[in-house]
Amino acid sequence: MQPPLTVSPTQTMRSRGTTPMPPNLQTSPADKPYRFVSLPDRAKKQPVTAGQECFDHQRYTGILSLTLNVETATLVASGIIALGTDVGLKEPLVKTAIQRDRQLLIPGSSLKGVVRSAFEAITASCLGLPQAKTTSKKTLHVASELAKCGAVKVSPEQTLQDKRNSRLCPACRVFGTMGWQGLACFSEAVGTGQVTTSYMPTLKSPQPAYQAYDNGQQQVTGRKFYVSTTETVPENKKNIPTQTAKPGYQFKTSLRVTNLSEQEIGALLLALGLENLDQPWKLRLGSGKPVGFGNLTVQVTEWTALAGEGSPSQTVIDRYRTYAQQPGSLTGEGLRQFQQRCMAAAKQSNYVLGPQLQQLTHILTETNYQPKEQY
Ligand SMILES: [Zn+2]
View 1 (cartoon, rainbow, N blue to C red):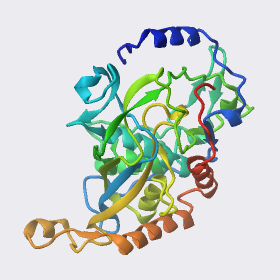
View 2: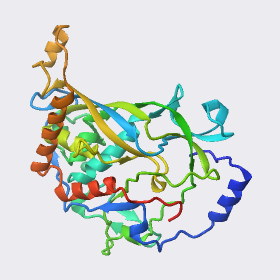
View 3: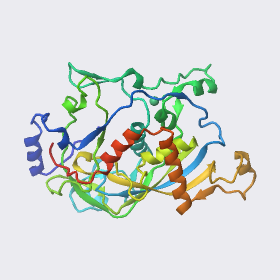
View 4: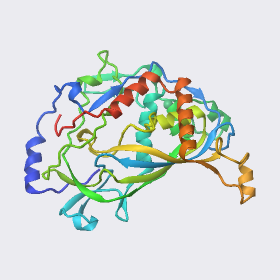
């Protein structure tokens, strides 16, 4: 739970004035800051062939080095309110970001959540919830074909083969589920650049009873994504001072993958928004998405292969037997072709669903959406 935010007297009056207002359920869906990606008919669940425990040389194991470019003010909140002087800012009190040595950090788990959502939406993956309660009387349902992948039972008798025989959807196989360790892992993203203050409006609670969540047949409409924006709402010093990264700020991180197929790497790259390498879509991350905060684009700067393309070694043992053998790596044009080939494989095989990819691309590259303070 976040501690209560201490604010100036004017802000206190302002929030007292707005909080008791009933949520506006009448806003037109087109005015809302989010859209839906339609659900596929069924989740495509298949047995898994190789997990973390071995190297499959028909598959890809390695590290994608990533740069995240901040496109609008971004905050991954620490939950702590600090004196401005303690974090090098002028305001008396500031809502702080996760940080180390005056640079902002994004936990690997936060990145994974954002990328997994996109990956789930563009592949035939399961839904985490069997149903969604919208009011005390009403519940929205999810087709049973999209039910959450069954947890892989943890029992002393269970063999690795039993685990592999469990049928998992694309997202659960790559990112993990109960009893199955995922095959893609983000490291902490470390920022470089100038950290500055932004003024973030107070957000209202979610409104699960809002009509647009119901597709008209008491079923969930789809997966919800906030529309990308080119700017935040106008700065207003009456809003909450927050410690943010602004456009131009960069984060560096890496994505380690184990035993992924070409299609799976391709789907991961597409989920990072790289279908058009020259104009990536904007991932939405951190606080204040409805008011335009947290737009980031991703760029892959290097692929370091431990197995699969780019890797000189035939077996893992070789890498431990000699100092001379280094993992292979791809940059520049070679890297570009590698990404394009993997993404094409993911699309051509229908591992990535065309209509859903198109819908999400539209949501995350829409540039004329103007965020508002109130909806
Ligand atoms: Zn699943």
